[in-house]
Image (cartoon, rainbow, N blue to C red; front, side, top):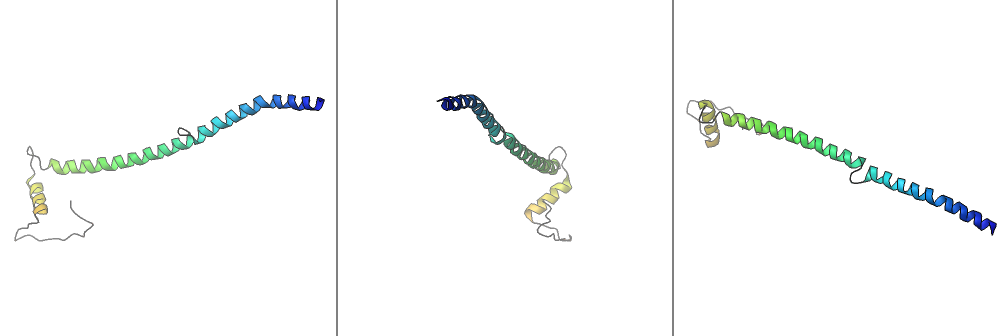
Length: 109
């Protein structure tokens, strides 16, 4: 009987620390692996970095297009730019012009 009381007393003494360590383990696991944990944060930061690179490329492409279009605006029309663009779109050349072919991967436009 005394043996069972000792076992019961030890079991009661271990219940609270066991629950505490289980809760600590639960929160530690979710702090690392949860939807807002450390691993998710690293993944999100990598996605943000990749998106910033794509954004920079898109902005550079937009700026290049804006520079090309700026030469074709009515306020300051660049005749050479207009003629070059029209010839490229219409595939027309004059009789006295020399044609320099480009490789397929090296297009002007």
